[in-house]
Length: 453
Ligand code: S3P
Picture 1: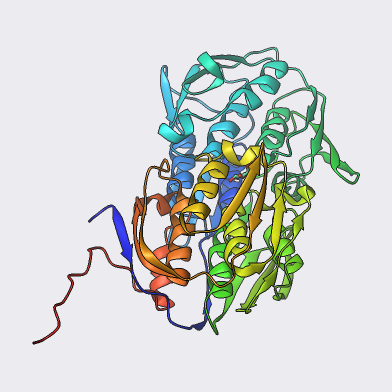
Picture 2: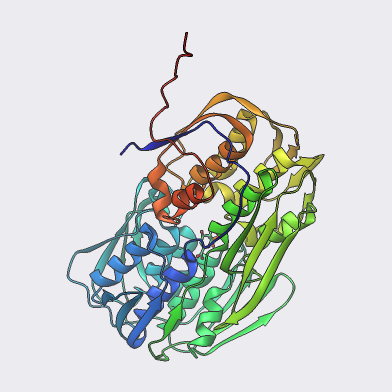
């Protein structure tokens, strides 16, 4: 099968109901927490993407067995710090920053030396953000340049810490919470607000945790060395994956879509808040609470033109994985100039997304001005494309691939988009859902048919 796709037709009008792949953050967290629980956990609807499969392979290498049953995964945990790896174990986190950073935090007390590696994209990402707090806990970590490969060897002398997390990174916050599980006493984390799945899971699992919130920060207190029991969990749909279809419907003439059973946790729905600020109508229906997490069906309808915004950077963390799509909407659907600030974290993702998003928008004819980590997008709501576009050299970033497909299917032009397999990291069903909605995706450039004489 070729590694790229061609799109040369806009998606015809659609009005359908879909279900997207399961949430990646919750899938990785439930696998890792099940590996620390006592007994057999059952995870239903686990996301079967490369990042999550790598999480399963990782716990297996560390001595925790799992079995795939008909509609759930069974994970056999033996409690805190029960990893039992062979000597010279190498763990490969693949493309996943979440897995790479979180697994280190569960190894701070493991006797054997473990080497952590990852793919090309993960190997260029910063690990100092977790190395720093984990060393304070007492872990022995070796790494040149604060990036992969990393060698970690646990210590017997683990202590609780006080840590101030100022980026708004859920990965750093979670690494501290996970490390706190194996530390005596109480760990205190003052964390800039970010997705709070870990805190909600700890509460559901009755792991002693207290969260004291103020406007921008949460003080999180975790009492360590408390065993917890195995659990059952049904993973809801992923808002980040849903966002591609929210924007597809928004940019497709006379179209509407309902996305069933999506996690709409307040700390994840920055994109919904931002699109609503732009005047977009998005309805959350059938709202429910499942084990502390809010879920709902999302309904969205195409709208002619939206208004530009000055996006508050307090929403950055809750929309961190959706900015490529938000910029696209600002560029091709709004009238006026939109501003987005303090976006340095975007360049630290699977690819330098801020740089690549600007390049992409300019390529399709949207004016963008940048000063440091702030950008100004000049909306061009009547944009129709006719040229050829080739998307390549983006470190196989799954979200750039998917955003490019949405642009190609709604703006016109002839597109060749490379690395279609990148969707396997987070959203394996992406292309089949596009096809179900009526998109024409070609694996080969269609032959140009000569007109009959
Ligand atoms: C994630 C947190 C975010 C996000 C990533 C998943 C998580 O990263 O970009 O895709 O599951 O905790 P940061 O916490 O580094 O911002």
